[in-house]
Image (cartoon, rainbow, N blue to C red):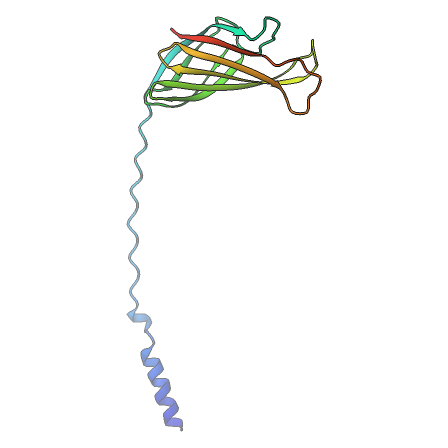
Length: 159
């Protein structure tokens, strides 16, 4: 019985790999750094809010003053940008020469109804102009006994 046990043990030991026979794994080749993207070529245009008309002459419109202007830098091939026109900061995109920009303001209308209002404003159109300015407002959710909301529309020219 002793011989049989040694024979089985000897077979198992023979089938186990020896440390001397193990070859080390090759080191991975260092990865080449990705090339940095080329900076986008930037273009610029100057815009002026030439005119806007509120839906009622008694409306308060929380928008830039007429004749407010801004210089806008945007990616020539299209992409995201932002600009400030008067006290309102717009953000948006240029795609295929068309600008889409929007802004939101929040303000208290203390002299009349003491409500908190939110405005949504937009400037859209061909980057070469003319562009359309839009404005609409509503009391924030939960406000009551507020004045009637106003809208406005106007024109933005590229200089």
